[in-house]
Length: 321
Image 1 (cartoon, rainbow, N blue to C red):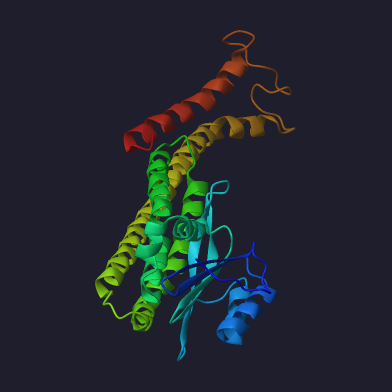
Image 2 (image 1 turned 30 degrees about the vertical axis):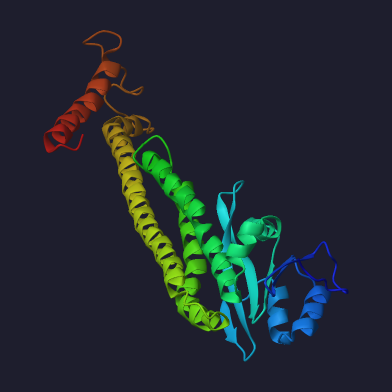
């Protein structure tokens, strides 16, 4: 079933072979492992460095005897609700495929184990380099849709919060905008490079696989369309949340303004009678008594209340209430 690379750790580099084609899968590659593979298969040193780099721009490098493809795919973090990119590097040769990726990209590890343990899957997926590449890229693209389903489900949850005046949705909206932006940033290069990738990969197979790759391309476009819809939706929610929040704030300010305005007469009168000058009914002239001992207080309350009631009637007539 396979061969071995003597200088490479067996637990890090796994091999499976079928009909003269070898798939070498490297999880969390190290400098020594990639250098050994580079010597074994005459891989370009710059591409080996790209495999070890934490973050590289997606690219396709076509050489006479091999093809190097570097892509980014999203990983969903359940704890934070965010996505981060996971780099995947592929070397395609006439009779070999080398994949180097982080261990967190489980779909690729699962696909490798399926070929390793299932003879039928191995026969189907490893007919040629191009066949194997198609199965790898198809699995990686299909793995986008569970994440997109989570995004759309969370958008539905945000919708309920946006139209609930008692709940603030700003935090969820901003988090979801970040998720959508990150997903678009990862999928956009895949859309741009996919045609070049499929054209260059097709030379490693005598069978015409354009229909298969076209199907993968359709899935990529579908994922992009879902993200476009999600971006438009979240922008609508953002604007709606802002408008509704502003409306609530304006209502609060209107109530406070009316309350403050109605207290202006009492404040003015209180300020006047708080001055140390002789005033009717004040301490210097003596209190008014024609309505009893509290006449001065009643007169002052009437002087404060009447203008407030007049303003209240006016505000109501204007519809400001």
